Length: 91
Image (cartoon, rainbow, N blue to C red; front, side, top):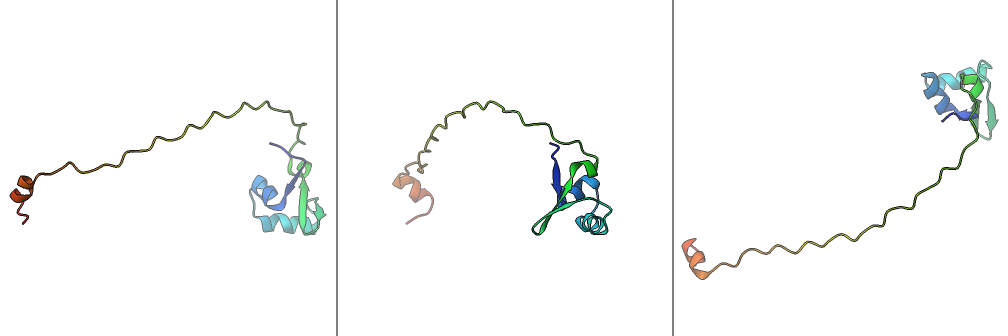
């Protein structure tokens, strides 16, 4: 999505340089930007990006109902007889 303004890190990603390099270009006046408190915004036009088109509403479909998970029955070892225990060497 193309926007009207980008932050310094976003502009750096679009230009393929470090955020420090973008900040230095802004400070030297080589790249236009506006300041919002401590943050900077670089116009999309300065990055070669077209301004964003107005957003369109996308109809949302309702989410599918979530069915409860089936509980697994606790696995129990098969019953053993005393004869089996004797053959194993158990006292």
